Image (cartoon, rainbow, N blue to C red; front, side, top):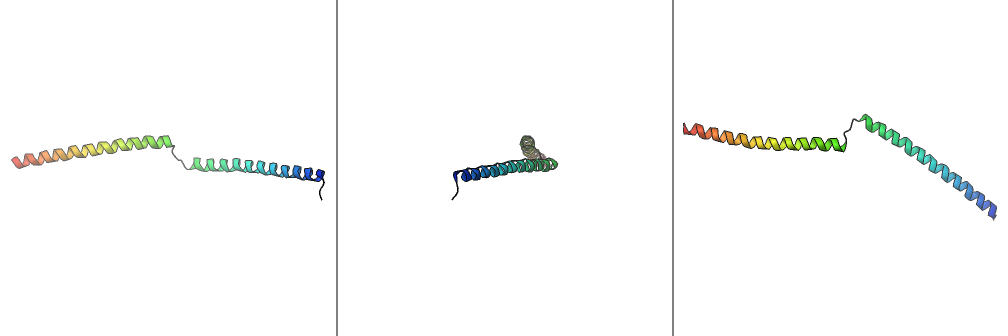
Length: 86
């Protein structure tokens, strides 16, 4: 049977192992984060803000295109009506 001293020593050793493991995981986390950030920076990605700005511009362009298509259709209709009268 273990003595109280042996149990305390065992718990102390266990705490050291756990502390070392936690530190290793912390170091590994930092290393992985650095690798991921490097990888992402090489991919030339856009930010959410940049994407939303371009998306808004594209939406306005689409709305303008629809408006111009309607105007063109009205002009073509007027032109056809003018040719029929002649």
